[in-house]
Length: 150
Image (cartoon, rainbow, N blue to C red; front, side):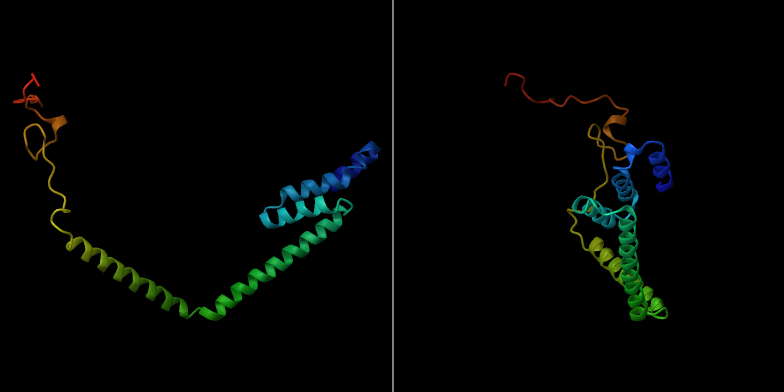
């Protein structure tokens, strides 16, 4: 991008004034890390005289700090857990899952009969072999036996 802008400036000097601002803006928009992108935008707004290469160097420095911080956290986790302890963690998780499954089974067995699902029946004929919409018998009138006079 820098070489392209330099060639553009060679062809037309009017682009020289916006070269750094354009490069900095493009650079900030292409950064994948949201925190760094926000920081670069802030720097572009607060320090418009900051040159592109200075901004790039700050971004590299910031990313280096983030990488060091993340790797330090990962090393602490490795030291705390240790690779030999990984098997213990997996065994512990298996036992938790087994306990949860036992609790689920107990809950299913201890449900009151009112909550146990009864077999579905046809509302038309009462058969448990099908439902009303598949009933082979003629549809009963819902208002059978009720007075139409009110």
